[in-house]
Length: 379
Image (cartoon, rainbow, N blue to C red; front, side, top):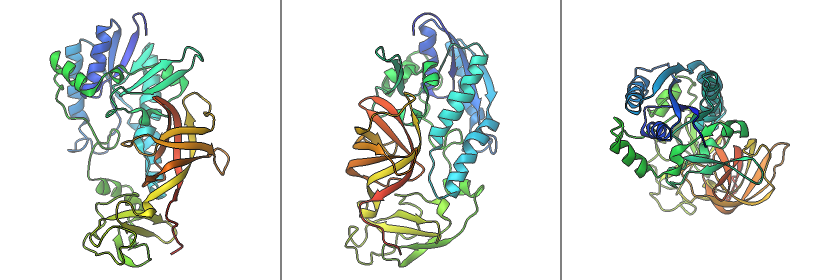
């Protein structure tokens, strides 16, 4: 970006967006901060501290020397993100609210608001990069330079129009450098802990939170042979690969040939919505937890069109190394299939499959089904 521009920065109260604002101000741009409030149901609780975050964001704006505006997008969040989040859980899938939140709130509602304020660009504290390909003129979404913080996975649904208006200054830095800059310039949140948990809702006891909105429907937990080993509180409250909170930790293996020893931990491996049955298996590398292929739909491509089928890399969860795979058309119109070189662990319907060509994020979609290495019999 060349020349002085009016840039609206999403200030969250965290250190990444704070340094983003400072870097842009140092580069000579006219910078305005916006604090987004997107959750109201229990905003005074220990888990959702948006009032505290706004105080931090305002303190940052004061140090950087910019104006800050408090904007409420709670209705947009509830309608566009949270309602879909609950629908997916109710259907037995495990959605990724951060992906939807970025596409619908941070780079739609926020972007629209910033444009009304006369912004030429928006900026956030995400660890990703944007560049315009000189050969095609298309904007590309790149991984952040810090591999341990790269957030391109959560941004894969951004369009050409959104990327054309977006800056990610800290994507060019490592987190340690961001912390160093924050401390050096005296930002009040230089040592503030990174936020985790659900986008805008915070980190909280998840089952208790979900239980406020979804009905519990208890049913059996069974092992791979169909024997009852416990009771679940409702299929919506579990995700594939889950190890904690099953209540069957003391149960010994019954024929541990597949799993890994008599006291190997139990993992959620399958959810049968029709019979309201949760299946658990023993051992991290049990065949039911490994998938050689998956189908995804609801695809979104950064370039505006799908890439050519063939070899590439993909992630099926955020904290994962790129896995080599082949992209092929899926069984239904608009669906796609990924066949992996090596089996992937706990591939979960509702999560995102995100595709890469080296450092370039191509886009992705929502995992519809996975093909396990170990055939799951009809129990």
